[in-house]
Image 1 (cartoon, helix red, strand yellow):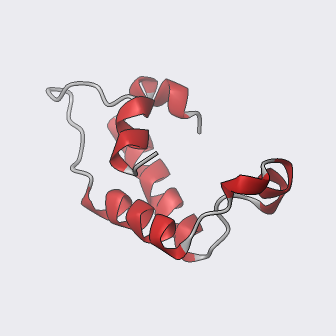
Image 2: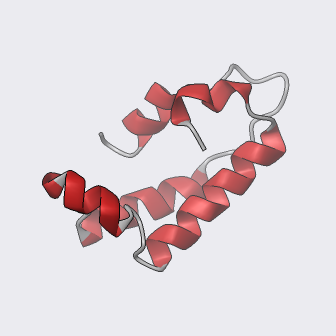
Image 3: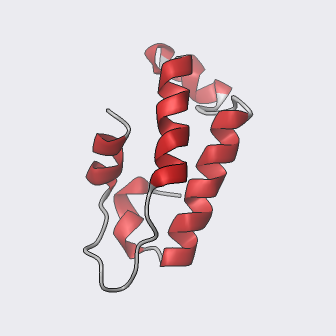
Length: 80
């Protein structure tokens, strides 16, 4: 998944990514350990993880009639 290309994914792909994000945060494997090792300040707090999980569960389905959702929209939604 590449958030810079979020608007290029189909509705089904976006929903699949959102569910994968939800699963990864619930399993506490997001961000990956290798990423945290390289970017030491990237570890997510419990509050960060909860916010991402809420976003993944609450985000309405995107239909072909909705405006495109950008990576910036997603980052704004999760408070980055």
